[in-house]
Length: 281
Ligand SMILES: [Zn+2]
Image (cartoon, rainbow, N blue to C red):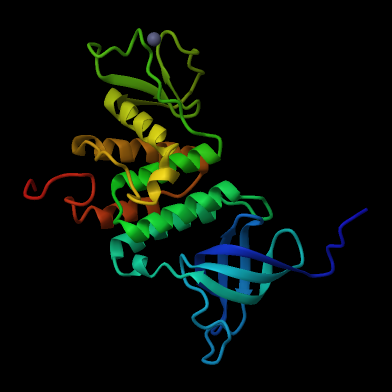
């Protein structure tokens, strides 16, 4: 028995709009994330015409019911119908939420695979966007999302320190192997030749460990708080951000630009971002 790939199938799914790009003067290419089919790329013909049936039916971060024609497993599909289920209006009232949501959606669009069941990833993005509608973002929001994403991709680093070498009285700097995703010391697996090793403050690893543990309960908390319960230590914020950035670039192969831009835009208000208090600048 074989699947007839020549006949177009009509498929229905809920999907989150990750990216909208012009395709021609009047059409769009829209990238979606769905739980059932992973990343879906669709062309919306005539999307920008004044009488288009698609007008106002989708926008970035919308969750929509999507009816589309699938000709092949991968490629660009044609949309038949799109109906908004959740427009997430609260996101649009605050540019910080838009900037954060844009970065997260961009990250997901790069990691998600077409024609692949992606229920966990869909749930993570959906819940984070719902949480962002309820509360403004913090650095913890972004880091927790990234840690969850690394976990879904099976490349979450191990933050555990060596009980012999990395004691509270020892020097605070720890060597961390980026490729292996673990600390290095005399007791760990020996480093391989040419291995990329970062020197990182012990506290950075401990904070990331705490965040990744909180991430396990993220779903339960997202409903009310939407972000980390405990604020991150301000003096560690940049270290956390940089360390995880290097790790993500290495393991998810994503460009640094969108992430850096998100931080630069959010950093303009240190009171909100990173937990610093006002008046210390
Ligand atoms: Zn050791």
